Structures are given as structure tokens and as C-alpha cells.
Length: 339
Ligand code: NAD
Ligand code: WQD
Image (cartoon, rainbow, N blue to C red; front, side):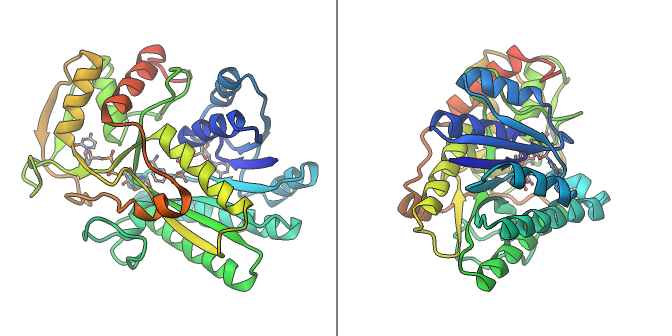
């Protein structure tokens, strides 16, 4: 079975490719490498001893997408490609809407034309916006989203719902990720942010290895267990497995039009808890100081993970210690990422 994976070379895409190849799927990758390296796909091939058919293609290039569908019989698409930096999206919103929203419309138009209507989409917990926890799939979305990035995810979800209303052959799974961290246990693939990381885990691991001086913990006076923000961290390998389960549901025709699922552990860890788990896993001290709150941060959110368990049979298996151990192995083996 041929699965087109857009954004395959990226952090979550590469881990999902491993899972797909290990489970007998053939992978065709589409990526423009704007935020990744083709080396990640070579590492995926090394880990699995299987090969990937690779296309360097931008989702803004309709002819490029068409060529891939003309040259391959695609059974389903897992769609990761998009820009994801929250802060950057506030500075260059048009670029985000063009890449993420127009790119997805282009992809879906080609899929419809070619008769491939099974899609798994990378959405985000950010679509919930508000602060009523835990987040449940039935909550209203799109209300208090704090960035253009988040709004692209909300808009795409709405567009995909419209697609399913217009044509009942569409089977779409919207996967709302919480906070993916960790790396493949081989230490060969992992998160490779460009420049100074915005997210907590890559920042911590770069401090631990001595690349960055110290972590700023944004806020110590939130109404949480220890005053720092609480998030629902999910191991990227668990997350990758969630995609396979969603895909299987589409293949079995169990999916009714558009379905949405939270992919999270269903529990939260504070920033200080993550730091101490990382120190335990690495044996290093993570230098840190308290800093003012970061604009737009919510004090606490985590998933209600029941729906994914009931319909996809998905539950996380890898805890915070394993997330830190695997991140540290990746960081130590690849101090300069894929460079
Ligand atoms: P990533 O940046 O590592 O991967 C995205 C990939 O898409 C990259 O390889 C990039 O080169 C490619 N890409 C971007 N724009 C493209 C375009 N126009 N055409 C072709 N390729 C393009 O990000 P990731 O962390 O792997 O995230 C994957 C998806 O999951 C994204 O859609 C992201 O918004 C979503 N998501 C990520 C997180 C997270 O914390 N990592 C959380 C929720 C949702
Ligand atoms: C986690 C916690 C920070 C960095 C983001 C996106 C979200 C989703 C996942 C895509 C927060 C604190 C962080 C640092 C810190 N992505 N922190 N010092 O903000 O929960 O979610 O990534 O959809 O949309 O917003 O993740 O890793 O940035 O932060 O104290 O240097 O760590 O304040 O509490 P976040 P994060």
C-alpha cells in the first residue's frame, strides 16, 4: 500500500515513516526541505533497511504534486508539511497562510482529481485556544487562538470538514497533537530545530550539552502545582504509532467523514518536572533561571485521551523518563543535528 507522506523529512514525519515502513507500507515522501534535511530520510532508510521514493516538492506547486500522483498510485496521504513556528507566524502571517492553508487546498484538489480521498492531517491542541481542561474533542474550536499559526490549523480543519460535506467519499482524520518530544531510540533521528530553539525540550537538551548557556523558565507564579506551566508531553514514537492507527481506521472504512482525535498522554508535567526528569536521564545539570511569563502561554493544558483510546485503540506507552533518555541520546550522537 502506497502512502504519500508530506513533510516526511521533518521531526514527526520521519518518525512516522519508520513506523509505516516497519509495518509493511510503502512510503512516498514529499518535502521542500524548508525546515528539514534530506538526511533524515536516509537515516529512516538505515533504521528500517527499506527505501523511500523521494520527491523534492513544494505544496504551493500544484504541477509538482500532480506529477507525484501521476507517477504513483497513492492509497492515502499523511499530511505533515507546513510551517510551525508560533512567533514567526505573527511576523509573516501571509507566508503561513500560503504555505499551510493554500498548500493543503492544493494537495486536496489534486487528491480529489486523482480519486484519492483518504487523509490524515497534523492538527494541534492549539485549535482549542481556551483554558478549560482537559481538552475534549467536542469543545468549540477557533475561539481564542493566539497566533496565525494556530489559526491555519483551525482553518484547515474547517476546510477539510467542508470537503467531507461536499463529497462523502472523503475519509479524514484530524489528529490534534499535544506536545511531541523525544526521539527514535536508535539515536539516528530526532528534532533538529534551526537556530535557537523556541520549544522547551530542544532548549533543555542544548543547555545540557553546553551549546546554550542557560534555560529561561518562563514564569514561576502560575496557579499550577509548582508555579510553572503544565503541558501534556507525548513521545514522538507514540505519536507516530497514533498515525498508523488512524490510517488503519481509514483503510477499514470505519471513519465517518471527518473525525478528530486528541493525541496526548492525558496528563501534564510542569516545566520544573521536565527539567528534573532530563537531569536524571542525562546525568547533567540544566542551568536555568526564572524569567517573566512568555506572552500567549496558557498555565496548563492536557488532553482528554479517551476518544483516541476508544476508536483508534491508541494509548501512550512511553513516559517522561523515556522521552528524556531518547532526546539525550539523539542530542549526544548528533550535537549539530543533521549537519
Ligand atoms: P517540521 O518542521 O519538522 O516538519 C514539517 C516538514 O514540512 C518539514 O520537513 C518542512 O521542510 C516541510 N514543509 C514545510 N512547508 C512545506 C511546503 N510548503 N511544501 C513541502 N514541504 C513543506 O515539523 P514537525 O514538528 O514534524 O511538525 C509536523 C506537523 O505537525 C506540522 O504540520 C506541525 O504544524 C504539526 N504539529 C507539530 C507540533 C510540534 O510540536 N512539533 C505540534 C502540533 C502540530
Ligand atoms: C512548553 C512550556 C513554556 C521554552 C508549542 C506551540 C503549540 C504546539 C507545540 C504546534 C511552556 C515553557 C519553553 C523555554 C520555557 N505546536 N518554556 N522556556 O508553547 O506548549 O506549545 O509547541 O502545534 O502550538 O505553541 O510548547 O515547548 O514552547 O513550551 O519555560 O525556553 O515550556 O513557557 O510552558 P508550547 P513549548
